Length: 424
Ligand SMILES: [Zn+2]
Image 1 (cartoon, rainbow, N blue to C red):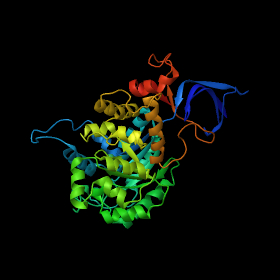
Image 2 (spheres, helix red, strand yellow; image 1 turned 180 degrees about the vertical axis):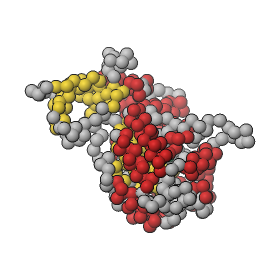
Image 3 (cartoon, rainbow, N blue to C red; image 1 turned 60 degrees about the vertical axis):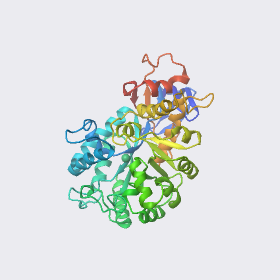
Image 4 (spheres, rainbow, N blue to C red; image 1 turned 120 degrees about the vertical axis):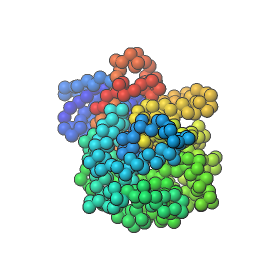
């Protein structure tokens, strides 16, 4: 048993001063009090906040971060679709051992940057020939080992990927991703769940790559079969071409189709949702589904900007993800998510109402939806019975020293980097 003293702890309702947090030998919180206990007290330097939640990751893509930032002599441009060809080449080359090594490095870096949890949108299931490994959960297990080694809580989202595009067979370069039908996908999920039982920091959700990657009748069938209470993820409306193709093949825009054909609720997390119209925006909010925004990747791939101002003011729920890992700082993701709105609106603090603080708004919102994206109900703030851990903001750093309490989070999100925080 040990008691820590913290000058400031961030809870759901704001900063708590001079908190004594007593933990047992397994670091489970036994008591949080403002009264000094009789036992010896260990002061911790810094302001304590919960770790950030990273709701969208493709670990293997970390191996190509920064590698495709020029245009080859033979090409006349570069966009999401040309980047995707490079990503396919990478996906075809990675062995299980390499995936584990890439993911371990990535997850350690995520932790250093302040993330405590990650949801891994995982579709690199099979061997380089496109055949299942002897252990069908081989690649998933590599991610579990990596998260375990890095001390990160993992929510693995095995992804159903079936086709090359609307009404087209899978491309040979996608062969490592493919499950032929709902039943073979669900069998794979069961294998992955069995593997996850050996890890105490892993839970398993489910998901569909995108409307273009799975037959519409199978999307409907799968989501009907999945139990309620598990996180369900899908990429949607990331690119204009994807929206146009969806209209050509399904007769509706992607979010419009999804909302009419799947019974969306708070278990669902729509990744990107960049190109949505007013009606689709309202439908997402009404369904209580969440959106996952990945600002550094969306900027890097030239996706576009999600209509965050209207979504936020309409009561929409959203979290952040690092997706391709071109950026790994949660502060940067939140900063640029909100700066996108400032640049469009040509106004400061456009998400705020009177008396509100931008950083506090986006921090608390993204933590809440992020935890839901992980399929977790605890570990959002600091409570008795939960594991003690989080980020200490360096109170003695000139950036934070003598700042008023109400500016701590905004200083962190708009001005700080990983060098200003320490993971405990
Ligand atoms: Zn993604």
